[in-house]
Length: 242
Ligand SMILES: C[S@@+](CC[C@H](N)C(=O)[O-])C[C@H]1O[C@@H](n2cnc3c(N)ncnc32)[C@H](O)[C@@H]1O
Image (tube, rainbow, N blue to C red):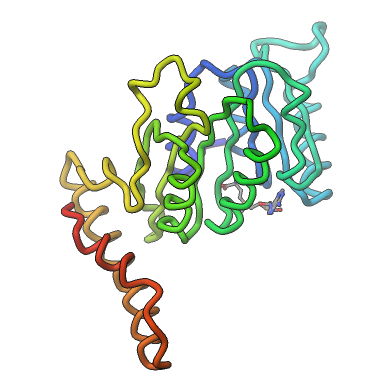
């Protein structure tokens, strides 16, 4: 199954350093299945809260990725399916390096799920690969306040929608490769330094669309005689130069 551009980009940001990859809010599990097929980690965990999705996915995995040694072929990774709220994933039961992927849900929910996981496992070093739908500024600001570090960030366009993809770590100090982890910017850094014409177009359009969104909110608040809650966000996006 061919992945969408967004899922392919997420896939390309996953290296082979992890013992456990959690495909959270996985829906049909397309991304996790590709990670499994590519043996990206010894353990791939699929998590979603909808029972019918998870039983359908489990049947597919049993069929195409059987776990017994007798039937296993090229795929050596183990998989597990969880029908649960992402806040409750049992990271404590597993040792080794974890990557938690949360993609395709709102920025507010992404923020809550990251918070819940981080709070329950303060001593574990966890990398998070995030692709929120909306509220990117708010999510970035929150991750920054938690002192998460940035490993990589990418901006993509798919079907005239723009997605920021963030690879972050909850524990900058504990990482061996601290040189590769930097401070998270509220609006992003690398996403505004495009290196080809297509990326220049994408970042310019994304800036314009994001500004329009916050200007609408600003005008609404002005009309109601309320103080603007988003003026600092507008100023921050206005200052970026794609
Ligand atoms: C649009 S899909 C995203 C699929 C895939 N991650 C992607 O990026 O294309 C959102 C999924 O999140 C799941 N979901 C929403 N809130 C959740 C939660 N708190 N815990 C687990 N799954 C959740 C929904 O059931 C749905 O299947």
